[in-house]
Amino acid sequence: MESSNDKTSGVSNSVTFDDALSLTKFGQLNYVLIIIAGTILTAFLLETLGISYVIAVAECDLQLSTKEKGVLSGIAFVGVIISSHLWGFLADTMGRRKVIVPTLCLTFGTTALSSFATGFWSIVILRFFAGFFVSGSSATIYAYLGEFHNHRNRSRAIMGASFVFGIGCLLLPAIAYVVINREWALVVPVLNIVYRPWRLFLVVCSLPCLVSGLALLWLPESPKFMLHQGDMKAAIDTIQWMHRVNCGKTVSPLFIDLILADEEDKQFEERRAVLSSSKGFSAMMKLVWDQTAPLFRKPYLNITAIVCFLQFGTYFTSHGLYMFFPEILNQLVESHAAGVDRTTVCNVVYTQNRLINSEVVGDQSCTPQMLNATTYGLSFILEVIYALGFAVIGVLINVVGKLSILVFVFVGCGLSGALMVVVDTPVGGMSLYMILVMAGFGGSVVTAATVDLFPTNLRAMAVCIALMFGRLGGVVGANMLGMLLDTHCEWSFGMSGAILMICTVLSFFIPNINVCTRGNEPLPTLSSKPESCDEVGYVTRKSHPTCESVENIQ
Image 1: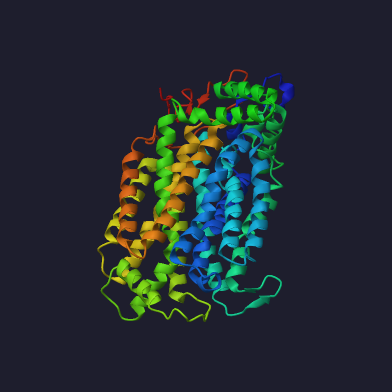
Image 2: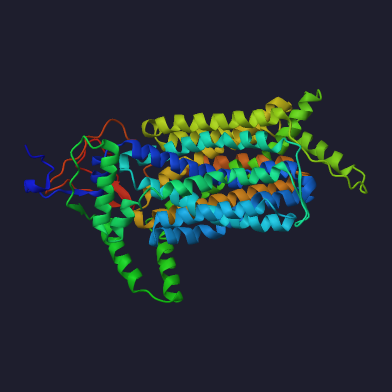
């Protein structure tokens, strides 16, 4: 008996792109994509936040002041900010995979070189370029992952990658503990440096970039991007390959003759025609502008502004304040071990600063620094909470909706920032600081919302710009703490709490933020007259009763 899906049956197997992805089913390929995406997100964290452990122990080798620590901790984010727009444009015009793979390899090479930095400015420059390159993979991977999943599974896939990212975060304190707290030293006469464990720590933190870059060589370009490039055959081949990998050889092959164009595809076709006829630098700059300008016009202007501020506030706290987390946490641990039971976080910081300033100026001795083992233990606990939190969010995001999660995270973390100013026990200060930097949960949820809100031709650019503002928040937060920590410590934590409260209010203005996906959507069937599905920024699938009907914002 012939299969109803067989090409020879005389039926024109035409489906929408979202339905085609549904037919591939959710299987081992999806899990591989989620793991690789999570590894790339982990690589970004190790590249940008791993420096927080370096500045806590390399003060002697690099002769760092508190302000210079702030600069060094935030310089990678500066590279990320400057390059975000470029990578977003290239990802939307050249391809997701063509951006992700080279930037991962370049990041690893730059970081390996930074481990041989001879002074403050050399490591600052190299860390800037590490941030410049890692930005290309970290932002583009969201669009790449999302375009291998249908609308119903897209947010869950992104949160799944965030869960892998949360598990990967455990590597940061683990690597730091295994590598940094060692006493070996290797003299490099050519560079006149001493190669200590913190330098090796930088290289080890960059290994996920190399591993994930090599893994992506096995995977194809996003089928959605290939479809928008006019290569329908390649898109269909990729979808059929996904079906074979997920379903195995025992299942009948998936036959698709045509992927029906929706309104978004037609808009992208017009842009592709303009792109192919454009020559010269000015024409290219006009294309960049045309790629960016729609995000700052109706109907996307309000959405862009909201997600950019939410990412700014999230990174301001979770990344900006995390840069000094190991150092401040170590001070709190040592203060508690010394028998100090009643003191605020800021008083501990002020006391440590006075001790440093009271040292003899002429003393040029340099003793390699180490962190207390309890500091690593508490950092590891924080990362475990992150991993479990992402797992819980991945399960609940389609049940309770994104808004409930954002409000819970922003309010809880914001209150912790305000309480840090007044709580006068080291243990309480440690706990509140750990809760405060958990604002990073909100960033992944906002990114999942961003992927849903924008069409394919603007999606990568929208995510890149939103994350660019997020990294700007990280730079501002790190440098603000570097400037204010020694004299106005309370302002740093109080401002973080206030910004997160503003994020709470803005969360209510994200379009369709209350839409949840419940139940199991029946798989579509191949038909010559497929169900209508318009996707112009917001998905509208009125013919499927289990899907929410979402209208475009006017």
